[in-house]
Length: 93
Image (cartoon, rainbow, N blue to C red; front, side, top):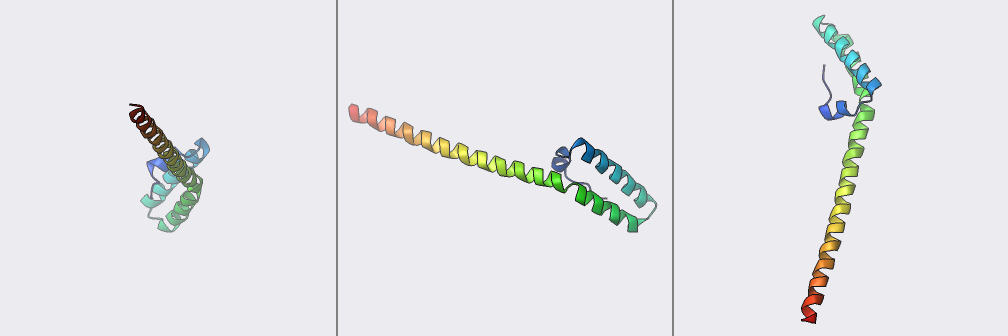
């Protein structure tokens, strides 16, 4: 059985996580019984189950990128304002 990443598991809802854990347990049991034909079916169900959490992780990443872009734009604006204020002070002297 392939586990999903810790980041994805952290974004599963309680119901999704309970189902995920149950499917993993079933998959491990089937592996010990060497029923690999059924393991593939269980793994496919797990892959489908975690898709919403993967999308949530991608959205968090996109939001972090937007926040970084806004921060850098604001920082550049403040630096430009500071430079202009310093030039004005030098011109007054």
